[in-house]
Image 1 (cartoon, rainbow, N blue to C red):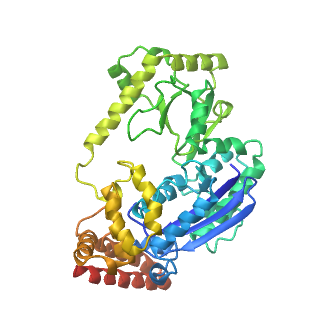
Image 2: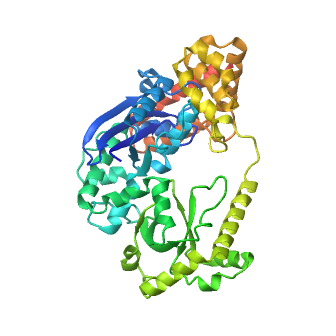
Image 3: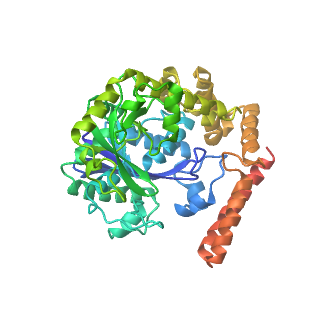
Length: 485
Protein backbone atom coordinates (compact mmCIF):
# COMPACT_ATOMS: atom_id res chain seq x y z
CA UNK A 1 0.00 0.00 0.00
CA UNK A 2 1.53 3.31 -1.12
CA UNK A 3 -0.41 5.53 1.29
CA UNK A 4 -1.32 5.30 4.96
CA UNK A 5 -3.90 7.41 6.82
CA UNK A 6 -3.08 7.63 10.52
CA UNK A 7 -6.19 8.83 12.30
CA UNK A 8 -7.89 9.45 15.63
CA UNK A 9 -11.36 10.44 16.80
CA UNK A 10 -12.92 12.19 19.78
CA UNK A 11 -16.51 11.41 20.69
CA UNK A 12 -19.43 12.45 22.89
CA UNK A 13 -19.67 8.99 24.42
CA UNK A 14 -17.76 5.71 24.33
CA UNK A 15 -20.78 3.64 23.21
CA UNK A 16 -22.26 3.18 19.74
CA UNK A 17 -24.92 5.74 20.72
CA UNK A 18 -22.32 8.49 20.94
CA UNK A 19 -21.20 10.71 18.07
CA UNK A 20 -17.80 11.44 16.61
CA UNK A 21 -17.22 15.19 17.01
CA UNK A 22 -13.55 15.47 16.01
CA UNK A 23 -11.31 13.69 13.52
CA UNK A 24 -7.59 14.18 13.05
CA UNK A 25 -5.66 12.41 10.31
CA UNK A 26 -2.22 12.49 8.72
CA UNK A 27 -1.75 11.04 5.22
CA UNK A 28 1.74 9.61 4.69
CA UNK A 29 3.55 7.64 2.00
CA UNK A 30 4.93 4.14 2.57
CA UNK A 31 8.05 5.69 4.14
CA UNK A 32 5.85 7.64 6.59
CA UNK A 33 6.56 11.00 4.98
CA UNK A 34 3.67 13.46 5.24
CA UNK A 35 1.44 14.05 2.22
CA UNK A 36 -1.59 15.76 3.77
CA UNK A 37 -3.70 16.17 6.87
CA UNK A 38 -7.23 16.61 8.24
CA UNK A 39 -8.12 18.43 11.45
CA UNK A 40 -11.87 18.94 11.73
CA UNK A 41 -14.57 19.34 14.39
CA UNK A 42 -18.32 19.02 14.13
CA UNK A 43 -21.31 19.80 16.31
CA UNK A 44 -23.16 17.14 18.25
CA UNK A 45 -26.36 16.03 16.47
CA UNK A 46 -29.70 17.19 17.83
CA UNK A 47 -31.42 14.82 20.24
CA UNK A 48 -28.33 13.34 21.89
CA UNK A 49 -27.20 13.58 25.52
CA UNK A 50 -23.39 13.72 25.82
CA UNK A 51 -21.20 12.12 28.47
CA UNK A 52 -19.68 14.72 30.79
CA UNK A 53 -16.60 12.55 31.30
CA UNK A 54 -16.01 12.32 27.54
CA UNK A 55 -16.29 16.09 27.15
CA UNK A 56 -13.80 16.65 29.97
CA UNK A 57 -11.31 14.16 28.49
CA UNK A 58 -11.34 15.66 25.01
CA UNK A 59 -11.59 19.27 26.26
CA UNK A 60 -14.87 19.98 24.47
CA UNK A 61 -16.71 23.05 25.73
CA UNK A 62 -20.45 23.43 25.18
CA UNK A 63 -19.69 26.19 22.67
CA UNK A 64 -17.52 23.80 20.65
CA UNK A 65 -20.18 21.12 20.96
CA UNK A 66 -23.04 23.31 19.74
CA UNK A 67 -21.62 26.22 17.73
CA UNK A 68 -18.88 24.72 15.57
CA UNK A 69 -18.61 25.52 11.87
CA UNK A 70 -19.79 22.08 10.78
CA UNK A 71 -23.08 20.46 11.67
CA UNK A 72 -22.72 16.75 12.44
CA UNK A 73 -24.11 15.90 9.01
CA UNK A 74 -21.69 18.19 7.13
CA UNK A 75 -18.82 17.04 9.36
CA UNK A 76 -19.35 13.37 8.46
CA UNK A 77 -19.62 14.34 4.80
CA UNK A 78 -16.27 16.16 4.93
CA UNK A 79 -14.58 13.20 6.65
CA UNK A 80 -16.04 10.73 4.16
CA UNK A 81 -14.85 12.91 1.28
CA UNK A 82 -11.32 13.14 2.72
CA UNK A 83 -11.12 9.38 3.27
CA UNK A 84 -12.46 8.67 -0.23
CA UNK A 85 -9.86 10.94 -1.85
CA UNK A 86 -7.06 9.27 0.16
CA UNK A 87 -7.98 5.81 -1.17
CA UNK A 88 -6.50 3.38 -1.85
CA UNK A 89 -4.73 3.41 1.49
CA UNK A 90 -4.19 1.67 4.80
CA UNK A 91 -5.87 3.22 7.85
CA UNK A 92 -4.04 3.02 11.18
CA UNK A 93 -5.03 4.43 14.55
CA UNK A 94 -4.12 3.62 18.15
CA UNK A 95 -6.36 0.92 19.56
CA UNK A 96 -8.66 1.91 16.68
CA UNK A 97 -9.83 -1.62 15.93
CA UNK A 98 -11.48 -1.78 19.35
CA UNK A 99 -12.98 1.72 19.30
CA UNK A 100 -12.56 4.25 16.48
CA UNK A 101 -13.43 1.85 13.67
CA UNK A 102 -16.64 0.78 15.41
CA UNK A 103 -17.58 4.42 16.04
CA UNK A 104 -17.15 5.11 12.32
CA UNK A 105 -19.28 2.08 11.52
CA UNK A 106 -22.21 3.34 13.55
CA UNK A 107 -21.81 7.07 12.86
CA UNK A 108 -21.68 6.49 9.10
CA UNK A 109 -24.56 4.01 9.33
CA UNK A 110 -26.69 6.49 11.27
CA UNK A 111 -25.68 9.13 8.72
CA UNK A 112 -26.83 7.02 5.73
CA UNK A 113 -23.24 6.60 4.57
CA UNK A 114 -21.30 3.45 3.72
CA UNK A 115 -20.12 2.21 7.17
CA UNK A 116 -17.01 0.23 6.28
CA UNK A 117 -14.98 2.78 4.32
CA UNK A 118 -11.76 2.38 6.38
CA UNK A 119 -11.27 -1.31 5.64
CA UNK A 120 -13.25 -2.25 2.53
CA UNK A 121 -11.34 -2.80 -0.70
CA UNK A 122 -9.29 -1.03 -1.93
CA UNK A 123 -8.57 0.10 1.64
CA UNK A 124 -7.21 -1.92 4.56
CA UNK A 125 -6.82 -1.23 8.29
CA UNK A 126 -4.26 -1.99 10.96
CA UNK A 127 -3.83 -0.94 14.58
CA UNK A 128 -0.80 0.93 15.88
CA UNK A 129 -1.00 -0.73 19.28
CA UNK A 130 -0.82 -4.21 17.66
CA UNK A 131 2.22 -3.15 15.65
CA UNK A 132 3.87 -1.67 18.76
CA UNK A 133 3.27 -4.80 20.82
CA UNK A 134 4.69 -7.02 18.08
CA UNK A 135 7.76 -4.81 17.71
CA UNK A 136 8.33 -4.63 21.45
CA UNK A 137 7.90 -8.37 21.72
CA UNK A 138 10.67 -8.90 19.17
CA UNK A 139 12.91 -6.25 20.70
CA UNK A 140 12.08 -4.83 24.15
CA UNK A 141 14.33 -1.85 23.42
CA UNK A 142 12.17 -0.65 20.51
CA UNK A 143 10.07 1.76 22.59
CA UNK A 144 10.47 3.44 25.95
CA UNK A 145 7.44 2.26 27.89
CA UNK A 146 6.19 3.43 31.22
CA UNK A 147 4.48 1.06 33.62
CA UNK A 148 0.82 0.43 34.33
CA UNK A 149 -0.49 0.35 37.90
CA UNK A 150 0.22 -3.39 37.90
CA UNK A 151 3.82 -2.83 36.85
CA UNK A 152 3.46 -3.99 33.24
CA UNK A 153 4.68 -2.08 30.15
CA UNK A 154 2.16 0.58 29.15
CA UNK A 155 1.28 0.98 25.48
CA UNK A 156 -1.22 3.75 26.14
CA UNK A 157 -0.52 6.60 23.74
CA UNK A 158 -0.17 9.32 26.43
CA UNK A 159 2.28 7.14 28.37
CA UNK A 160 4.41 6.45 25.27
CA UNK A 161 4.37 10.16 24.35
CA UNK A 162 5.59 11.12 27.83
CA UNK A 163 8.33 8.48 27.86
CA UNK A 164 9.64 9.71 24.48
CA UNK A 165 9.56 13.35 25.49
CA UNK A 166 6.85 14.36 23.01
CA UNK A 167 4.70 17.43 23.60
CA UNK A 168 1.52 16.28 25.41
CA UNK A 169 -0.14 19.66 25.96
CA UNK A 170 -2.81 18.88 23.34
CA UNK A 171 -3.28 15.18 24.06
CA UNK A 172 -6.79 13.79 23.64
CA UNK A 173 -7.40 16.09 20.72
CA UNK A 174 -7.76 14.06 17.54
CA UNK A 175 -5.06 15.56 15.34
CA UNK A 176 -2.49 15.65 18.17
CA UNK A 177 -3.08 11.97 18.97
CA UNK A 178 -2.96 10.99 15.29
CA UNK A 179 0.37 12.79 14.90
CA UNK A 180 1.72 11.20 18.09
CA UNK A 181 0.77 7.79 16.64
CA UNK A 182 2.76 8.67 13.51
CA UNK A 183 5.84 9.56 15.57
CA UNK A 184 5.65 6.26 17.46
CA UNK A 185 5.25 4.31 14.20
CA UNK A 186 8.30 6.06 12.75
CA UNK A 187 10.38 4.84 15.72
CA UNK A 188 9.12 1.29 15.16
CA UNK A 189 9.80 1.39 11.42
CA UNK A 190 13.33 2.72 11.96
CA UNK A 191 14.09 -0.03 14.46
CA UNK A 192 12.42 -2.84 12.49
CA UNK A 193 13.25 -2.23 8.85
CA UNK A 194 13.33 -5.97 8.15
CA UNK A 195 9.99 -6.64 9.93
CA UNK A 196 7.95 -3.54 9.05
CA UNK A 197 6.27 -5.03 5.96
CA UNK A 198 5.65 -8.28 7.85
CA UNK A 199 3.84 -6.36 10.59
CA UNK A 200 1.50 -4.89 7.97
CA UNK A 201 0.58 -8.13 6.15
CA UNK A 202 -2.38 -8.84 8.44
CA UNK A 203 -4.05 -5.49 7.70
CA UNK A 204 -6.29 -7.36 5.24
CA UNK A 205 -8.32 -10.53 5.62
CA UNK A 206 -6.62 -11.84 2.48
CA UNK A 207 -3.21 -11.30 4.06
CA UNK A 208 -4.25 -13.28 7.13
CA UNK A 209 -5.82 -16.03 5.01
CA UNK A 210 -2.63 -16.38 2.94
CA UNK A 211 -0.65 -17.05 6.11
CA UNK A 212 -3.23 -19.38 7.64
CA UNK A 213 -3.90 -21.44 4.51
CA UNK A 214 -0.34 -22.60 4.01
CA UNK A 215 1.38 -25.24 6.11
CA UNK A 216 3.31 -22.84 8.26
CA UNK A 217 3.86 -22.87 12.00
CA UNK A 218 3.64 -19.45 13.64
CA UNK A 219 3.80 -17.55 16.88
CA UNK A 220 0.80 -15.46 17.86
CA UNK A 221 0.64 -13.27 20.93
CA UNK A 222 -2.10 -12.55 23.41
CA UNK A 223 -2.14 -9.82 26.03
CA UNK A 224 -2.96 -11.40 29.39
CA UNK A 225 -3.30 -9.00 32.31
CA UNK A 226 -0.99 -6.53 30.62
CA UNK A 227 1.71 -9.02 29.61
CA UNK A 228 2.24 -10.25 26.04
CA UNK A 229 2.55 -14.06 25.82
CA UNK A 230 3.36 -16.05 22.67
CA UNK A 231 1.67 -19.25 21.50
CA UNK A 232 3.12 -21.63 18.96
CA UNK A 233 0.28 -22.51 16.61
CA UNK A 234 -0.63 -24.20 13.34
CA UNK A 235 -3.71 -23.83 11.19
CA UNK A 236 -6.50 -26.40 10.95
CA UNK A 237 -7.78 -28.52 8.06
CA UNK A 238 -8.39 -26.07 5.20
CA UNK A 239 -12.07 -27.03 4.91
CA UNK A 240 -12.83 -26.60 8.61
CA UNK A 241 -10.79 -23.76 10.07
CA UNK A 242 -13.53 -21.18 10.63
CA UNK A 243 -16.70 -20.81 12.69
CA UNK A 244 -19.05 -20.99 9.71
CA UNK A 245 -21.36 -18.90 11.84
CA UNK A 246 -23.21 -15.97 10.20
CA UNK A 247 -21.91 -13.46 12.77
CA UNK A 248 -18.46 -15.02 13.20
CA UNK A 249 -17.27 -15.22 9.61
CA UNK A 250 -13.99 -13.46 10.51
CA UNK A 251 -12.93 -16.04 13.12
CA UNK A 252 -10.28 -18.67 12.31
CA UNK A 253 -9.25 -21.61 14.47
CA UNK A 254 -5.62 -22.40 15.26
CA UNK A 255 -4.16 -25.21 17.38
CA UNK A 256 -1.74 -24.66 20.29
CA UNK A 257 1.17 -27.01 19.59
CA UNK A 258 2.14 -27.42 23.23
CA UNK A 259 -0.57 -30.12 23.17
CA UNK A 260 -0.24 -33.54 21.59
CA UNK A 261 -3.27 -33.73 19.27
CA UNK A 262 -3.17 -37.52 18.80
CA UNK A 263 -5.36 -38.41 21.87
CA UNK A 264 -7.95 -35.84 20.71
CA UNK A 265 -8.39 -36.86 17.10
CA UNK A 266 -10.92 -39.69 17.54
CA UNK A 267 -12.88 -38.37 20.52
CA UNK A 268 -16.64 -37.92 20.15
CA UNK A 269 -17.96 -34.37 20.01
CA UNK A 270 -19.10 -34.52 23.65
CA UNK A 271 -15.79 -35.99 24.85
CA UNK A 272 -13.82 -33.38 22.92
CA UNK A 273 -16.02 -30.59 24.23
CA UNK A 274 -15.35 -31.70 27.80
CA UNK A 275 -11.57 -31.76 27.24
CA UNK A 276 -11.61 -28.32 25.61
CA UNK A 277 -13.64 -26.85 28.48
CA UNK A 278 -11.35 -28.26 31.16
CA UNK A 279 -7.94 -27.55 29.59
CA UNK A 280 -6.06 -24.30 30.27
CA UNK A 281 -4.48 -22.60 28.38
CA UNK A 282 -6.93 -23.17 25.56
CA UNK A 283 -6.10 -25.91 23.10
CA UNK A 284 -7.90 -24.08 20.30
CA UNK A 285 -7.36 -20.35 19.90
CA UNK A 286 -9.38 -18.03 17.69
CA UNK A 287 -7.83 -15.39 15.44
CA UNK A 288 -10.02 -12.55 14.23
CA UNK A 289 -8.76 -11.93 10.71
CA UNK A 290 -10.57 -8.57 10.49
CA UNK A 291 -8.61 -7.19 13.47
CA UNK A 292 -5.03 -7.34 12.21
CA UNK A 293 -3.78 -10.11 14.52
CA UNK A 294 -0.07 -10.30 15.29
CA UNK A 295 1.38 -13.35 13.50
CA UNK A 296 5.14 -13.83 13.95
CA UNK A 297 7.86 -16.37 13.16
CA UNK A 298 7.71 -19.65 15.12
CA UNK A 299 11.04 -18.88 16.82
CA UNK A 300 9.35 -16.11 18.87
CA UNK A 301 7.42 -18.64 20.96
CA UNK A 302 10.24 -21.17 21.04
CA UNK A 303 12.77 -18.67 22.42
CA UNK A 304 10.50 -16.65 24.69
CA UNK A 305 11.50 -16.44 28.36
CA UNK A 306 8.32 -17.37 30.22
CA UNK A 307 7.99 -16.51 33.95
CA UNK A 308 8.07 -20.27 34.46
CA UNK A 309 9.19 -23.02 32.08
CA UNK A 310 8.68 -22.46 28.36
CA UNK A 311 5.98 -25.02 27.39
CA UNK A 312 7.58 -25.50 23.97
CA UNK A 313 11.21 -25.77 25.15
CA UNK A 314 11.31 -29.57 25.19
CA UNK A 315 9.74 -29.97 21.76
CA UNK A 316 12.10 -30.47 18.85
CA UNK A 317 11.12 -29.27 15.40
CA UNK A 318 10.28 -32.78 14.20
CA UNK A 319 7.67 -33.27 16.96
CA UNK A 320 6.19 -29.82 16.30
CA UNK A 321 5.88 -30.51 12.57
CA UNK A 322 4.37 -33.95 13.22
CA UNK A 323 1.71 -32.43 15.49
CA UNK A 324 0.89 -29.74 12.97
CA UNK A 325 0.58 -32.33 10.20
CA UNK A 326 -1.82 -34.45 12.29
CA UNK A 327 -4.05 -31.47 13.02
CA UNK A 328 -4.15 -30.24 9.42
CA UNK A 329 -4.87 -33.69 7.99
CA UNK A 330 -7.57 -34.77 10.44
CA UNK A 331 -10.74 -33.54 8.79
CA UNK A 332 -12.97 -35.20 11.38
CA UNK A 333 -11.18 -33.53 14.31
CA UNK A 334 -11.35 -30.10 12.72
CA UNK A 335 -14.98 -30.63 11.76
CA UNK A 336 -15.80 -31.53 15.37
CA UNK A 337 -14.06 -28.35 16.59
CA UNK A 338 -16.12 -26.35 14.14
CA UNK A 339 -19.35 -27.98 15.32
CA UNK A 340 -18.56 -27.39 19.02
CA UNK A 341 -17.85 -23.70 18.55
CA UNK A 342 -20.82 -23.15 16.25
CA UNK A 343 -23.13 -24.69 18.86
CA UNK A 344 -21.63 -22.44 21.56
CA UNK A 345 -22.30 -19.36 19.45
CA UNK A 346 -25.88 -20.48 18.80
CA UNK A 347 -26.41 -20.97 22.56
CA UNK A 348 -25.13 -17.43 23.17
CA UNK A 349 -27.54 -16.07 20.57
CA UNK A 350 -30.49 -17.85 22.18
CA UNK A 351 -29.59 -16.54 25.64
CA UNK A 352 -29.50 -12.92 24.48
CA UNK A 353 -32.38 -10.61 25.26
CA UNK A 354 -35.18 -10.99 22.74
CA UNK A 355 -36.36 -7.40 23.10
CA UNK A 356 -36.71 -5.51 19.85
CA UNK A 357 -33.67 -3.52 18.85
CA UNK A 358 -33.85 0.08 17.75
CA UNK A 359 -32.81 0.72 14.12
CA UNK A 360 -29.59 2.53 15.13
CA UNK A 361 -28.14 -0.58 16.81
CA UNK A 362 -28.91 -3.13 14.06
CA UNK A 363 -25.97 -2.44 11.73
CA UNK A 364 -24.36 -5.84 12.26
CA UNK A 365 -27.66 -7.75 12.14
CA UNK A 366 -28.07 -7.45 8.39
CA UNK A 367 -26.36 -5.78 5.47
CA UNK A 368 -27.75 -2.66 3.87
CA UNK A 369 -28.96 -3.66 0.38
CA UNK A 370 -26.63 -2.67 -2.48
CA UNK A 371 -29.50 -0.75 -4.04
CA UNK A 372 -29.63 1.50 -0.98
CA UNK A 373 -25.88 2.06 -0.67
CA UNK A 374 -25.90 3.02 -4.35
CA UNK A 375 -28.61 5.59 -3.57
CA UNK A 376 -26.60 7.27 -0.77
CA UNK A 377 -24.58 9.48 -3.13
CA UNK A 378 -27.72 10.79 -4.87
CA UNK A 379 -29.47 11.30 -1.55
CA UNK A 380 -26.63 13.35 -0.07
CA UNK A 381 -26.23 15.51 -3.17
CA UNK A 382 -29.95 16.37 -3.27
CA UNK A 383 -31.72 19.35 -1.71
CA UNK A 384 -33.38 18.78 1.66
CA UNK A 385 -36.79 18.79 -0.01
CA UNK A 386 -35.63 16.12 -2.47
CA UNK A 387 -34.01 14.15 0.35
CA UNK A 388 -37.45 13.94 1.98
CA UNK A 389 -39.03 12.72 -1.26
CA UNK A 390 -36.27 10.18 -1.88
CA UNK A 391 -36.81 8.43 1.46
CA UNK A 392 -39.46 6.25 -0.16
CA UNK A 393 -36.83 4.94 -2.58
CA UNK A 394 -34.88 3.18 0.17
CA UNK A 395 -35.58 -0.54 0.28
CA UNK A 396 -34.24 -0.83 3.85
CA UNK A 397 -36.64 0.85 6.28
CA UNK A 398 -33.71 1.62 8.58
CA UNK A 399 -32.30 3.98 5.95
CA UNK A 400 -35.68 5.72 5.72
CA UNK A 401 -35.89 6.22 9.49
CA UNK A 402 -32.29 7.40 9.76
CA UNK A 403 -32.89 9.77 6.86
CA UNK A 404 -35.90 11.24 8.67
CA UNK A 405 -33.76 11.83 11.77
CA UNK A 406 -31.07 13.54 9.72
CA UNK A 407 -33.64 15.90 8.19
CA UNK A 408 -35.07 16.55 11.67
CA UNK A 409 -31.57 17.50 12.86
CA UNK A 410 -30.55 19.54 9.82
CA UNK A 411 -33.68 20.98 8.17
CA UNK A 412 -36.65 20.39 10.51
CA UNK A 413 -38.71 23.11 8.83
CA UNK A 414 -39.35 20.97 5.75
CA UNK A 415 -40.81 18.01 7.66
CA UNK A 416 -44.61 17.58 7.71
CA UNK A 417 -45.86 18.55 11.21
CA UNK A 418 -46.95 15.01 12.12
CA UNK A 419 -43.60 13.50 11.12
CA UNK A 420 -41.68 16.21 12.98
CA UNK A 421 -43.77 15.53 16.10
CA UNK A 422 -43.27 11.74 15.85
CA UNK A 423 -39.48 12.04 15.60
CA UNK A 424 -39.26 14.52 18.46
CA UNK A 425 -41.53 12.33 20.63
CA UNK A 426 -39.37 9.27 19.95
CA UNK A 427 -36.22 11.16 20.93
CA UNK A 428 -37.96 12.43 24.08
CA UNK A 429 -39.08 8.90 24.97
CA UNK A 430 -35.50 7.72 24.81
CA UNK A 431 -33.54 10.49 26.49
CA UNK A 432 -36.12 11.17 29.26
CA UNK A 433 -36.43 7.49 30.16
CA UNK A 434 -36.06 6.81 33.89
CA UNK A 435 -34.50 3.41 33.21
CA UNK A 436 -30.81 2.56 32.81
CA UNK A 437 -30.68 2.49 29.05
CA UNK A 438 -27.99 1.50 26.55
CA UNK A 439 -27.79 5.14 25.46
CA UNK A 440 -27.16 8.17 27.64
CA UNK A 441 -30.34 9.57 29.19
CA UNK A 442 -30.79 12.92 30.92
CA UNK A 443 -31.04 11.14 34.28
CA UNK A 444 -27.84 9.17 33.67
CA UNK A 445 -26.08 12.39 32.67
CA UNK A 446 -27.06 14.09 35.95
CA UNK A 447 -25.80 11.10 37.94
CA UNK A 448 -22.50 11.13 36.07
CA UNK A 449 -22.08 14.87 36.65
CA UNK A 450 -22.78 14.47 40.39
CA UNK A 451 -20.09 11.78 40.64
CA UNK A 452 -17.55 13.89 38.76
CA UNK A 453 -18.42 16.93 40.90
CA UNK A 454 -17.68 15.02 44.09
CA UNK A 455 -14.34 13.90 42.69
CA UNK A 456 -13.43 17.43 41.54
CA UNK A 457 -14.56 18.81 44.89
CA UNK A 458 -12.22 16.45 46.72
CA UNK A 459 -9.35 17.71 44.54
CA UNK A 460 -10.39 21.37 44.92
CA UNK A 461 -10.45 21.54 41.12
CA UNK A 462 -12.30 24.79 40.48
CA UNK A 463 -11.67 24.67 36.72
CA UNK A 464 -13.31 21.27 36.35
CA UNK A 465 -16.19 22.26 38.62
CA UNK A 466 -16.88 25.23 36.37
CA UNK A 467 -16.86 23.00 33.29
CA UNK A 468 -19.23 20.55 34.95
CA UNK A 469 -21.63 23.36 35.81
CA UNK A 470 -21.64 24.42 32.16
CA UNK A 471 -22.36 20.84 31.06
CA UNK A 472 -25.11 20.52 33.68
CA UNK A 473 -26.83 23.67 32.38
CA UNK A 474 -26.64 22.26 28.86
CA UNK A 475 -28.26 18.99 29.94
CA UNK A 476 -31.01 21.00 31.65
CA UNK A 477 -31.68 22.85 28.38
CA UNK A 478 -32.02 19.52 26.53
CA UNK A 479 -34.40 18.24 29.20
CA UNK A 480 -36.52 21.39 29.01
CA UNK A 481 -36.77 21.21 25.22
CA UNK A 482 -37.93 17.61 25.13
CA UNK A 483 -40.21 17.66 28.18
CA UNK A 484 -42.89 19.28 26.04
CA UNK A 485 -42.49 16.87 23.09
